[in-house]
Image 1 (cartoon, helix red, strand yellow):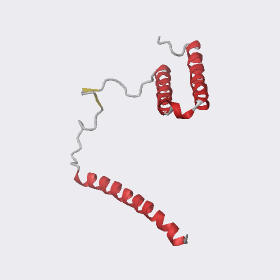
Image 2 (spheres, helix red, strand yellow; image 1 turned 30 degrees about the vertical axis):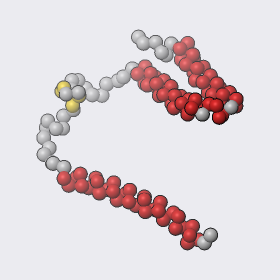
Image 3 (cartoon, helix red, strand yellow; image 1 turned 180 degrees about the vertical axis):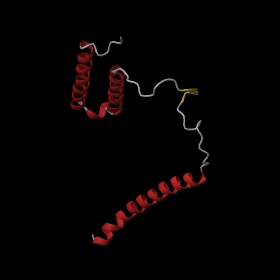
Image 4 (cartoon, one colour; image 1 turned 90 degrees about the horizontal axis):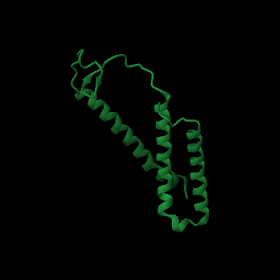
Length: 123
């Protein structure tokens, strides 16, 4: 295989990257040129679910919100890993089953640890 043939295969990737960048920049420039520009005080105010905001937007949230969000993300990702494994379960064999048992056990141990530390209790 010659060097020119080698780079020819990457030419399509380069064209795709350049076309993607041009399309992105063109969309942003076009939106900037076409968008109406009528700034006003009402447009610069905060907007919350159709109502005017009340109070200071910089408030402290309890850490439990973040912990619940992290637990949700962890178990959501667990589902993403378990679904393809379950689909191909018959083809994978005993080794993959043992690996999934270890994976679920690690997550279960983390859940039990959080439960024992009373992280999951809402006050």
